Amino acid sequence: MRKALQIAISLAFCASTTQADVSFSGAPVYQATVGAWWTPFYDLNSSEPAKNWADTRYDAYHSNPSGQTALGTYSSGWVQTIDSQIAQMKAAGIDFVLSDLTNGVGNGMSETEILIQRNTIPVAAAIGGPLWFGGPTPADVQAQMQLEVDAVWNKLANQPNYVQYEGQPLLVAYASYDQGTQNMLLPFWGDSRFNVQRATGRLDAANANLDLDQLPWDSWWGWLNEDQFASPTAMVVSPGYDTVHLRGSAGFKKDRFDGEVYIQQWLGAIANDPDFVIIASWNDYNEENHIEPSEPRVTGAPQWKDINGFQTSDLYVQLTQGYTALRANVLIEGFYYSEESSSDIYRLEQGSLIYIGAVSQIEPNSAVVRLPGSLLTDIRNHRTLSTYPPPTLPSGDLDSNGIISAADFDILLDAIHLGSIDPAYDYDFSGTIDALDARVWLVQIFNTRSGDINLDHLIDLNDLSLLATYFGQSGSYKQGDANFNGVIDLLDLSIMATNFGYNSVPEPAFAWLTATLVGHVYRRTRSTPLKSRK
Image 1 (cartoon, rainbow, N blue to C red):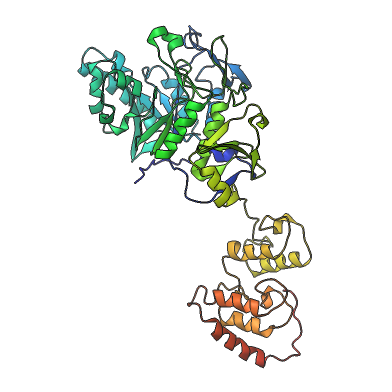
Image 2: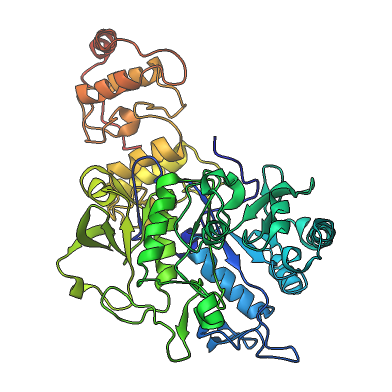
């Protein structure tokens, strides 16, 4: 059973969709909650303003204190930058932020407090610094860890938008398994106030000669340096990794291959559908596993390029948005899609998938979202496409008296009869005001079914009597024209037979209704005048 993330998390990409986005029918492609590591210690306001940016090679797109969009370095505590980053993450479909306090809670706590106080995206914290500097003995490490946990509890965990996982605040403890024997404390460390999960990197574990299959399932919450590990709890997706520019031969590098690493890891995560997919990271420029829109600012830093070689600063945000949208079975207008089993590329244009004959036809600065398996073929051939998000129905209260009633239906019937083009009556969003709009009003607005002639939410002998009175004549719905073709006939009787007994008794046989109708028609005189459309 999927574990519960007990916080109000919505699919944030919805805020950035357009009416031309589409959803496709069927079970969700996957259902994981998506989080992203966020590095809070970058600073331009300290006595050493370049200390956290000195060894980085990229500039980020962000908002500066004047509220203007800029390309450059920033302070993590700038409110405008935090708001800009939150907006970008939510537009990409990221559900919550995992604030990286693993360098010691003093390096980023105040910025994390600003982030959580914005109250616009759920936040959790990750700690682990004491495993490097906490002391020479496990007892020293544990004591220092407790101080950091207390700081998270006192300053963050009781905020209304702190992430609750299985009824407790989520806390991620990070440690590299190659840091020495004191780190073996990590699998046994915990705090009863928190749901403690653990983050490490597969490279670290491999270097420590650990049996990867024996590591606990909750060990895979961040810093994926090599291949993914299929965990049912959390799987990490990362665009690449590079600490060679920081540490020389002591560093590690995993090339991004123009988004290919990120794509493959998303496909792996989707195939396993864990409780969480964790992006490592949004903005770690030191270890260069960031996806925040950015560009190189020094020679030698690789550019992010699209399929045709154009520099694309938001390549990974586009890919993230494409993959997170699949949780709601949504394809995004203007996005390009391919699949694992085919090299064909399609673009969603005005709600339709259009084949792109050559890669050169792809617009510059565009990502291509590769869908798992043969999903794209399945969508094209077997799935129903619908506008996403679904359009909001016009109000059914057409006389604006606060009550949806038969009087409103009369107004709609008049509008149809007069050929109105007012969108207030366009309940099926077709651009035409006709009988289909009346059907939508009956079923979706008034909550009844065709054949409820007197609109009392019952389909019974009273409705049959009305139909019989006008049988064989021209007339409106309220005289028995259940299919809105202008004539009361056996087609209308068939509709009534199908729905007869709605909200009261089981459906009767059609033959019984026909016999009853004959009695009513026999008693009706031929001199009965035509009634008005109402």
